[in-house]
Image 1: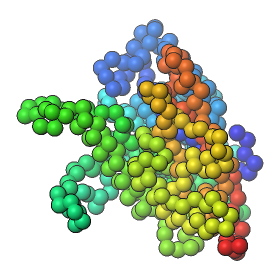
Image 2: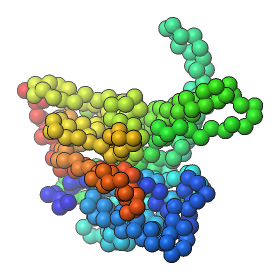
Image 3: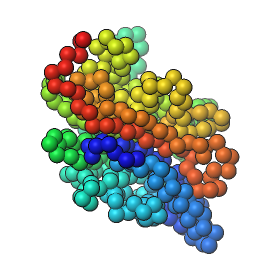
Image 4: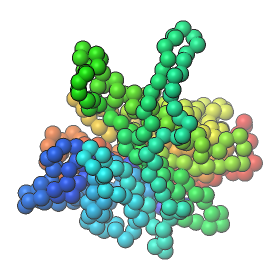
Length: 370
């Protein structure tokens, strides 16, 4: 999408649905694309479909999930004609059942990288984020211990320097996440089998999955709290969280992640003027613009779900006194999900999401109370 201003930014998230090179494994011992003529033909179809969606997204920053092969993602960018226009941060999956996230950042008009200070994959929860013998003091008396201390899929963190001079936009921290799915956890049934698995196997497997996702969301929130500025009216810390969060916008998981900032819906309201550590959902920003908007990125058993999200800090919220960018629009590319044979054409089982923001700093000295 053409930018009105070189400082404008657009963000997208794209679950690639097991993008793997021919012969490579994903979740099972059967390659999704066998290393033979038929498998390579299927792989080529997936690369072409994915490249077509990439061209439609045409975003400054694109987050990816379910990356199993860096070369496969490179093939997609080559097919789209984007290979020389983006910096690609990706790596191979370290083994079966361990998909990775990735990030693409468009180079500036002169072909220079907008990525700054390197990047890192984050596997462990923050050092002091431990649930060890916690005890409630209001009614319940049980001790709570949860030993989960690692993301099931490592989070990717990178910093970008958007284009523009006089004024020069601040650096933006980008986080790409793929939280644990709502599907039942694969638990060991080795002897001696725990009673919960003896009597309630399916319930236990599902509960463990939810517990892990909640812990990952909370750990992610703890990480964000450490980097997002607070207490100083002049301090800014633009942050964008992108990815397949595997839960709906109003879920407990996403409430944790967002910090539940307030949205301004009445002109005279003071809501949203400041939320130093809050993250605003691009989906909700779009919904506030249009009562007819329906947002879904995944269909499971005829249930329409929004699992893929773009969350932005107050620097991207229209009514914040620290606003630097204004929300322009959000688009979801999900028509393919309504075709029963979408997988046969190499399509993803998720819709793709793009949100666009225009450079539009809050005027200095504005009286927000008026």
